[in-house]
Length: 246
Image 1 (cartoon, rainbow, N blue to C red):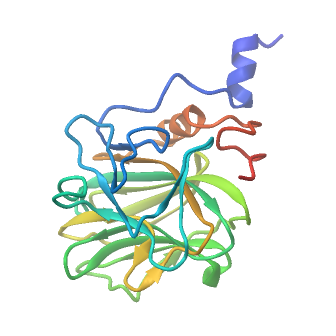
Image 2 (image 1 turned 90 degrees about the vertical axis):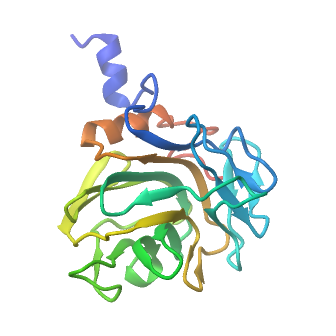
């Protein structure tokens, strides 16, 4: 006999909450959304600016929707949420987000200083709807990239996560499951977090982003799985899940 609690956990029941140790960015699209910025829920954490009035959908599942022209979330500034939310690209980190993919390009995570984009993860229709990672470092350039072997489906929500161990090793996860890893080298700079724009390329129209989590440490596979379970319901029509089409 299987105990009921154990069965529910196996099938994907929500856990009590996300991992809080080393959490530096917790961006919840259901609260703390201001007209010009998206407020970080971590105490004293910095926010993300809403560039060009990116649309906020204030119904479940709450999200930001891109128009494909100039929308993105990026470095806050005076009057627009305070100071930029930075991630030290040379150190250990974890970046994670809920995204509804629409079979087009999505600039999921960019860490950028004023002149260079050090780390870029995009979901790319040009790479057969797979995630593509580039890192600018002492050993790699922006022309060197890695395609992770997972194919994203149109009109589907996913929880994606990228970890870096501080020594140039990156691991990619989808919905709490390991997808791939590679030694890509590391950047030596702090980078402001940006979602939705890489250079002159913008996330395609209709793409939606939900919860975003940032850590100053490498989350384990089980911790990423915990976050995935804590922020969705496997058969929900109101929270991020496989059956939700809004």
